[in-house]
Image: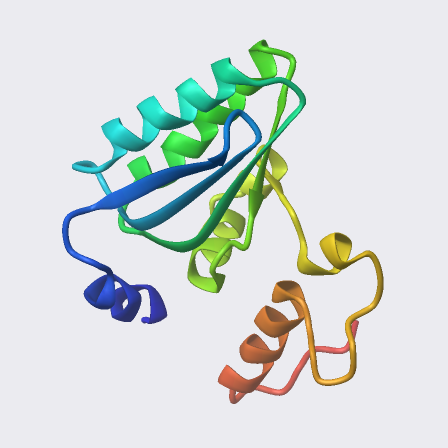
Length: 148
């Protein structure tokens, strides 16, 4: 439901890619779907080919509308591996993070966690994406939690 709501509020015209630090940091914003993926793919491949070491892709402003949206990151990840690089997704929105987990792509793609990036435990009142997802899942269910 949240993904549908986010898809309706996504900026029109597809995705935009800004290479903030050439070959090292790329920011992707907008709606990733079958129409916008070719431009995003070309920009990510160019960034992979241009640098060395880690390539951080900040995706805080994306809405993944279909499977091709995730596929572009898998393709860029594979290209980075062939080039001896590591592709890291940063600032992944919660609906996209859920989709990555449901499709089990978290086993393939490296998703940088807020906690790891901060270098320590969150301050009081702050939680990482993983904790937020667990909290929302617990609040949304009317069934009692299973004892583990």
